Image (cartoon, rainbow, N blue to C red; front, side, top):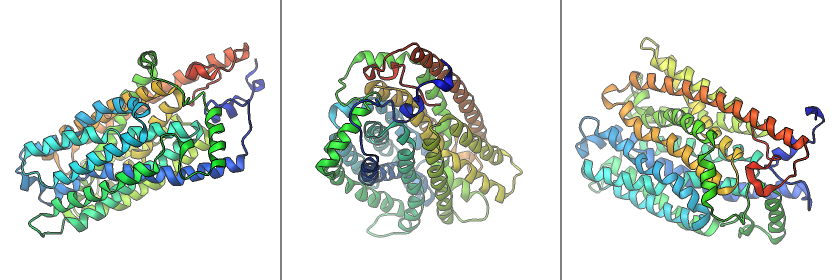
Length: 481
């Protein structure tokens, strides 16, 4: 069949593999419900992301105010403490992703919030390197149930062409976390009272704020969005129809199956995006962890004021990704935007890696990297979430991608070495190589998607039925480019 005379597959694809048969849904009512979902779900997810990311990465701000000296850290022990949290974090990501549907979102995310908050409070009272390492190992296991599961929940509640914008909302909270963390650190690290140093107050206050999120999460987060206490019965009825229509992308009735996990592990797209994600996350963790030290080394600021100068960088990161995510959903394209933001990171790292660049150019380069850090991390996951179905295949696929990607966090402390501060030239060279690798792998994955969709369109032209029970094997489930 001539491609221009095909059925309107783009609209079906835009609706996340929805079936167009059955009861219709009033579009105005649906938009109103989606806005209500955003207000109630994304606000909870955003706060969980904000404080989990802040509690994991605030070691960078703590290190500017006597943290290493008070704990007697020597050599690259600080770098090891930064990295070790990801050793357990990455191992538990696929596990919690799969367990989310089994344990239920309400119980899993509430329990994680309580655990990570208690560990953050406990960090304020560690006295040596061994205790710090122990707390950071446990922190990684606890926090691994938040970010991956938030993104899986989005695939359970929204359509495929709605994923990126919801990711932008959540990742915007992460950028706000960076800005808020800098401001909070600026104030709290100056506190010297009750026998505690400033960095101890930083951990203590952030942990107490975080634990307040646990009861909110338990009360406000439904196990299925169609059961939410903040929806009227008429809205629940409409949402139930919407979920039934979206069964090709997510089936509420799906039960755990080992065959789905095996099917995931046979898909080459998983491994391509996983390795690419490692390169992408090199950028994310390098900048978020070491940016205060990088900026402090520019030569025109004191160490403390470096915390304040991180605020506009995170603000630009948040604003730019909100725009990019909206455009990605609007155009129903992932990879072109992903390659674009990776190029922004590449330019920034190249400038930072040149020894003779001016202070102004290096500060500009930090902004260039920041434009890409959240957009690239999120778009790669959104792309994978769009192109894998049903639930357990998608859960393992995105979990594996994040496992490999977040391994960059485990390695970053050994790549950006303390003795290389503040320029971290060796680390910058590594980041350049990783970013180039991610650009190439993204291009390869694009070619696979194009070929797969060509095969699916051929089957549709031959009269293949639309069977949502086949999940992403359904010929009518076109992949997102």
